[in-house]
Image 1 (cartoon, rainbow, N blue to C red):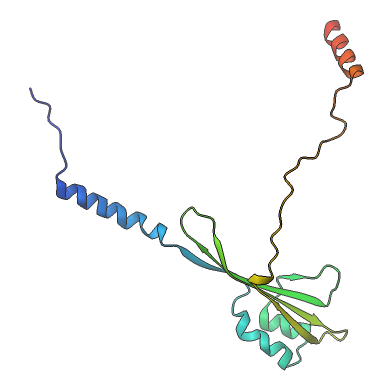
Image 2: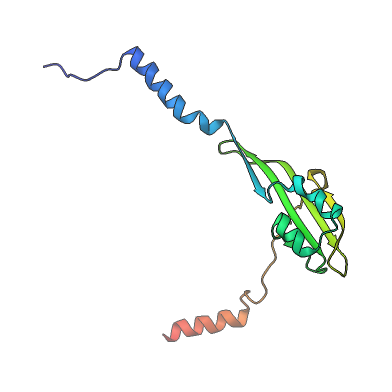
Length: 151
């Protein structure tokens, strides 16, 4: 008795590879995503031109991405675009930070723009910090050995 099994023809194999390619190819094409405040470039010029107050800026641009910790008269609006392909590390294509400075009467007096060229790369320290108090002394070892022998 012959063993019967179904073999795929050459056309079926090519068709299967083509169908798999259709499913996996879009994951390699990449994805562009925008984060932060949208349409920031379209509205930011109106802030100084119209001498806007904080409340008006918040209505126009929305709440700030962050506020200065040390100076309540500095607001920051952040926007960036990131391009990601498959499993690789994402690339930041565009990064914009607008710092809006207000005076004592809450009117916008200055806008400072930072972009990707102003970004600082932070290098992390790879050394380890030892935790004090976890070392075993000779006295600790003697007490532990006596405790185990008494039990």
